[in-house]
Image (cartoon, rainbow, N blue to C red; front, side):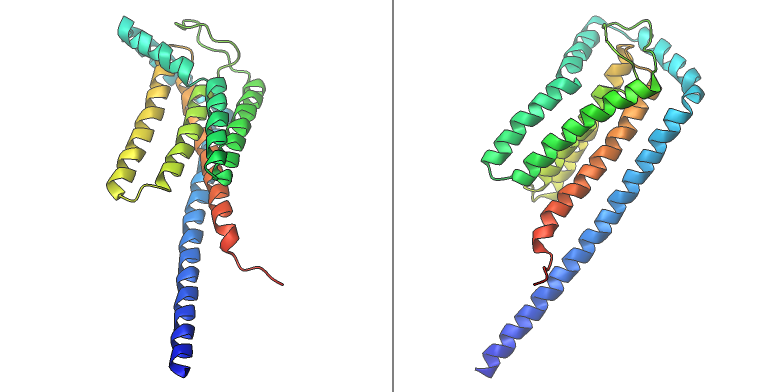
Length: 236
């Protein structure tokens, strides 16, 4: 009898220590994410406030992209432009969110839809505030202001969240590494083709990456909070 009680207490103690250790590890990871988020925001604000510094780089990249344009690359760039526009990505996020709700992943669904909705609104607001004109030699006709690149910002957030959702199910470190590499390659490709089409300056794309990284890190922090909150002790 007493032996069974001791075994039970020992199991409860080890379990509580395991939970405490897990919470501590999560806290450290959240601090790292918060640091990356803040650094991304600082970098973004630096680009906004120092956009004139990037004028030589913008002009150089614009000239370089013109020199490498070919029909096959242009076709691929136009397809990517249509697929990764902010509006199609927002619609896709709503469809995926509906599927996640069906799969009883309501936290992920809410986060994806909310993050993409917030992303679209923030991009529109920043474009209106910065009021940066697009290059005059664009291959495609694009409406509105250029900074930051909505395609880049949205792809960083959208694909980044899908990658995080995939990490929840992937067990193999190799599979996670491959998924992460595909994510990085995809967002870099989107940024490259925005410059290639001459619809954005280099600084627009850089600003899109930084703003997207900030929004993505913030969303991941929210996701981790939603995952950990049910396991926190409650009073009463």
